[in-house]
Image 1 (cartoon, rainbow, N blue to C red):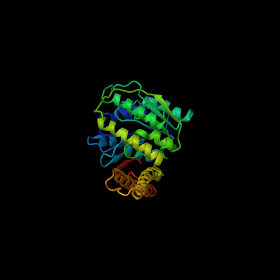
Image 2: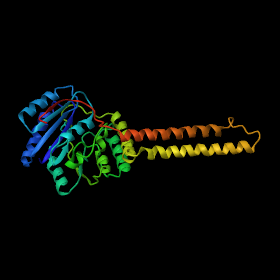
Image 3: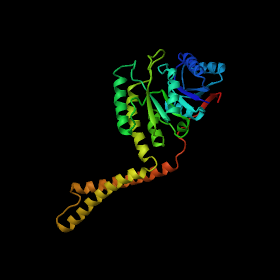
Image 4: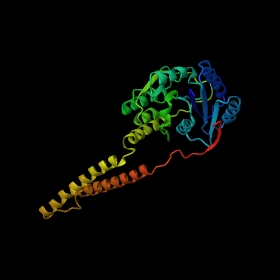
Length: 313
């Protein structure tokens, strides 16, 4: 199979028929064998009924439905598990991503040997203070911390080599950082393509300030996991050692001073409480490191959600 198109969605009943017709036209025009996997992330409108009707008329279009909303990362992860195409394309279902970009994205994966090609919506039609400026700040921070020179980490339109999506796991809200996860997983060749951004035709945006704040928290998480996910004791143990030795040094000073000065009182000095506190914190950090090591070595699949239905899979 040439391509798999993975599309997570939430309450997009109006856009789905037009999107699927457009996708089918593009792949047929380019003589590509394909599948379209629509993941309904707990929609409360008629999106699932629309998916069922579309799938009934086209065996290449398949559907997955979650029992409730689990987020875009969980939807993508399930779509990646089901994908069979040589190149996997992800895109949003709101018609702001253009299926006409698919042939060139596929070409860049196959001919230029990229592991991932990420879209860059250089010219946007949602130029608002609540979305565009926070997005620029977020992307600048992500570039600086990850070393990956992408302008738009959060662009839903991306292309992946099949081996990449079968080698990584996306969970929580980490879909924004799939290039970072892939890089740390041994897939460093990441490219970028300027893509068309279309004005929203149906529905409302799912973006809010909470996503902006959560994005930075997730960025800190993914950087920590990338560096210390398999060796948390290296982080907590180092901090624990620094704190404990600091407290121990103060303790030695106090003991020497006690014997050298006859009227020296330990408990009346701030140094005593500093030494006690830092030694306790150091011990706690060591214990945290040991517990984190046990958790890391015995962790199971994080995506423990249930699927209600699958169509054609």
